[in-house]
Length: 388
Ligand code: SAH
Image (cartoon, rainbow, N blue to C red; front, side, top):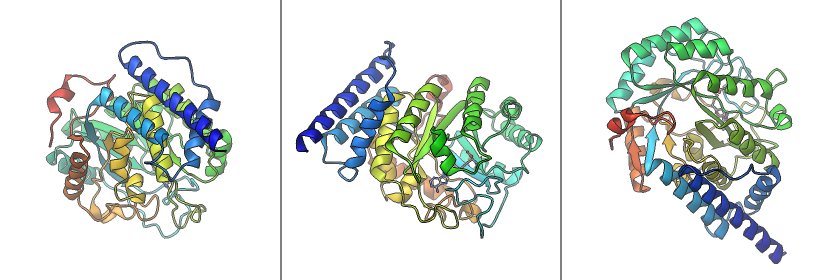
């Protein structure tokens, strides 16, 4: 048994070292090695799952962490990019089984922010130094294409050069195109699970993985910087599913990847399922970093919720983005995707100070520029990058 473990560990170490070298040589313009076999990935993931409490004691974990750090630094240096998150509606027509603001979840106080209120969040964010904003919400039919485009046009008028990211779920190609033309430049849409079978266990029948994937490809084709991603430890998830997630990400090649632990939410059908593992979340972040070296990866609020220094740990495993909340404090508690979400009482400047300190203490550099993906960045980034 001990021998078998040693063999597995040796295989994982060799995988991590190979991928580290591939990532570094791809950055210097050399060809990347052939496609990864899904079985290899599933084996690597299940190896880490078996050791999931031994995060700092096994050589495989430290090799993975070092590889992820090295690759992150080779692409983006020590910088951790700030995005101001504005959760502008918690109305949703969907019923994702894990989500605390799903249509049928009872006791949720529903709200929508007006364009004027959103503008006020942007102004506040700009005063604090932000150049990158994310507008997230449930799939709220109130926000028709006309309303979204009017809102984006107003924001663009006052903020011509800031990054405007949308995260409002599945829409038509035409809708994505209109919002892009109105001035939105990035879009976050986690694929949630790349396995048809697993996706169907997390969503009602009317939600299809094929549609979600089609949306992601539409967004890429239109020219958005696109973010996909998934939860770690969502109910019924296997190592094979996580391997499929990574394979799909490699195929899609998004600019951003959001990975956070599943956290149960009371009032949902998954309320009694266990929280996703911190260690496995870090492992999946690190594998994403070495397999997709140039992606922007947030150290998520969910990671900070399950561990007081979860976000700092995320940076050491390859994450390089934080998304503090700029929504008015009065609505924060209503955007409860899961239980015990952190930062629901702190105003924007307090969140910013707290995160800045955490980033500096972990040996990284807070960056308030637009923080574009390397393939989209221009000189504007360099001018605006400040240690603010
Ligand atoms: N309506 C948008 C935004 C969804 S909320 C959309 O469809 O993209 C943003 C993300 O929060 C989701 O994609 C999901 O991965 C995550 N999330 C939802 N419920 C969660 C939970 N219980 N635990 C952890 N993450 C959750």
